[in-house]
Image (cartoon, rainbow, N blue to C red; front, top):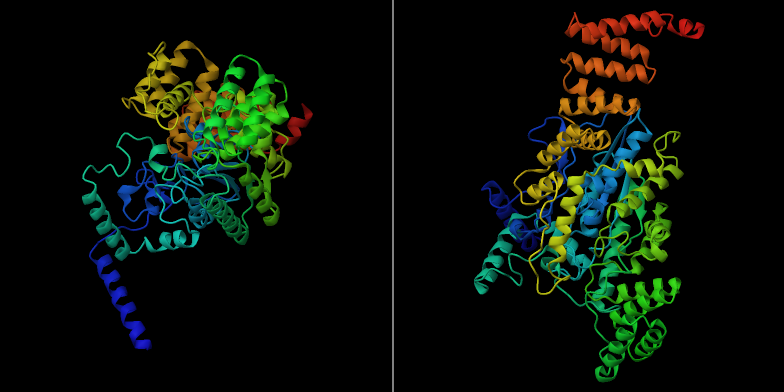
Amino acid sequence: MLVALTIPVLLLGGLEFGLRLAGVGLEREPLFIESPDHPGYKLANPRVVQRFFAIPEQAPPVSIETRFFPVEKTPGTYRIFVQGGSSAAGFPYGLGASPAGMLEQRLRRTFPDRNIEVITTALAAVNSYALLDFADEIIAQQPDLVLIYAGHNEYLGVLGVGSALSVSTSRWLTRFYMRVNRLRIFQLMAKAYGNLRASDDPSGAGGGGRDDTLMARVAGQREIPLRSRLYEAGVEQFRANIAAVLDRYRTAGVPVMLATLVSNDADQPPFVSTPCADTDQKAFRPIVAEAREALDGADSGRALKLLQRALSVDDCAADVRFLLGRAQVASGDFGAARKAFGAARDRDQLRFRAPEEFNGILAELAEASDVRLVDVRARFEQVAANGIVGADLMLEHVHPNLDGYFLLADAFYDAMRKDGLIGDWQNAVPDIVARADVPVSEVDRIFGEYKILRITSGWPFTDPPVTPEIPAPRSEIEKLARELYEQRINWAQANDQLRKLYRIEGNRHEYTRVTLILADAFPFIAQAQYEAGTTLIKAQRAPEASAYLRRAVEQAPGVANHWLAFAHALVLTGRYDDARDSLRRALALDPGNATAIKALADLDKLGIGGEGSATKKDEQ
């Protein structure tokens, strides 16, 4: 009996070994790779989404925002990782709008003497399966904290229960697939099956044309009623995966902050509203139509009566709940309106927004796992008009605008401050200052608006899709954004040209913003660090300047000007002995450098730095 069982195992093992030896199939894509062009730095693998597919060509064209970080974590570094979907990635503005981008800038300003790294692994179209799959590789990078904002993609994201990119509604089978798709035998079988399906569909459309938006491609089940079997499968999938994620981090001793979810409730009508199966449509729809007319005619009282009547006939239709919310806002009953809009969102059968039940699950899991729950939803409601999240903070259904993204990052920042993480918060950056300096350039903002126009011109916002109308450029900045949108220049080129434009105009604040954005994007370019440091000195932000200039001298220690600028920042922050050392390094490279000679002489005259400096300073 044992021999009979062993023979197939040996045969399959031999076949797998042979296929690997012959180079058939692909290795599993890692989450992080070492930069091929910049030794000593890592970045998130642009092809990591392919790991979820036995046939890589089936993967959606999404990637993690590029963020370089050192291969070796240096002593004293505080390293944070962010996990989630496109809302956690800062879409459509990019990394600077994300919690990772905004937090890194603000935390570095709060702790100028600490090396702060905030690294994003957020990826569009993925859900809790990806969070769980990435966890071990994040742990290997020695994180000091992990921030999670995820849940909107749970049903229709990659491998979700209602996704076109799903393999099963069973979590057990999906997890099994995620393991076996690494095998060459499985990849070979999947490719053969894929070829068979392609022969049955000569157009190659596979249910979606080449021009379909990402939302159209991932939406397999476009009607998932509240409390249906598929709905409950998504709830269980989310609960089990997030619990497993938290367990991984708890076992590894990594602190986690888990955020509640927010979406556009007040100004995003339900995508799909379906009445209950037994509803008499002839009696129901005329009531709803009459209620719409009353609401459009500003007769909110009559609209409320009609909508309550409609709900007594049918409790399933999401659009009725949404109209009820509008009527209650018009009548000034904002608390009731918030509940009605939430009920409309939860009954929207096209599940691109997480149901409120997910926030309850997050709260339960946070308490059970003893992790910090960051109530992002409550933060948004505090600021939103009438306490109901809508277009004042959101771009469409789930992606915040810049004010919304600031609130998301600010909620994490305040939670970290409350918990006393990292160190002494005496230099905490006020909200008004942090908001004025968010690392999003004007080109990034306009480019993001163009991307939103493209998305909202397609399904499910517009059906049939229409060609987005990008407005004609009215300024040099809009021209740069348009060139970036049309891929005539890349992101770095667009922002570098923007920076030069600000320099010509004398716009010091925006010049500083874009200079820092570029320096953070390319930490291995010494000149970028030098320019950021000298710009910050002029802006009277010497503590931050010293951090950039330290990177400049580390990247290019043979440049005397880098050491001179570094010495300047050190003097301004009271680190006189270190400043002397930097000036001596500059003189070693350029013995006749008049600036270094004079600076050393000035330190001597003032009795600052060197032997006995404390006494001389006290005497003055």
